Image (tube, rainbow, N blue to C red; front, side, top):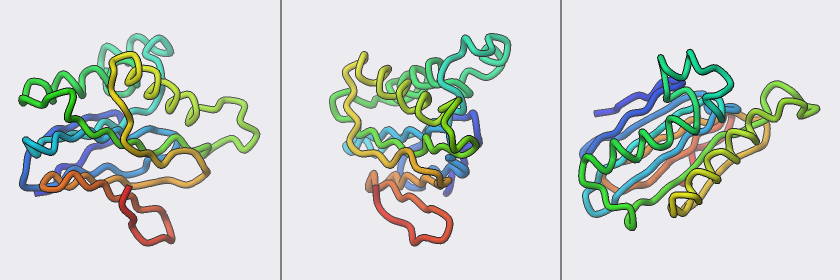
Length: 158
C-alpha cells in the first residue's frame, strides 16, 4: 500500500508499504524511520515558521516546519518508535522561484529543520537539499530506503 502525503501534510505508517510525497521544491520533506519496528513517516512542510501566518498554522500545523516537525515525531513516538534508532533523511529546499535569492524560502525551510532536529538531539542521516529542481520522495517501510526522483533523472537512493 502506498500512503501519499500532500503539501502541508504528514503521514506515518508501518510495514508493509511505502510513504510518498511529490513536489518538494522549496518545501522540505522529512523522512523519519525506526528500522527495528519498521515504522516511519514523512512530513511535507511549505514554510519555516508558523508566526508567518498564525491563523493558517492553527488550521494546518503541518504547513510549517516549527509546528509540523514536533508533530511528526510525536506521532512516531506514539507508535513505539525509539528516538535513538530514528533515521532521518531530508529532501527539498530548492530555490524554485527567485534566482536572486531574495526570499530564500528553500534555504530558510532547510535551516528550520536542521535547527529543530539539532535542538532535540536528532541527527540527520543523509540529505538532498538546495539546487533548483523539484523532488519526489518515497520511503520504503520494509527497509527504510528513501528514493528521490527528479525530473529527467533516474530515481536514486538517498
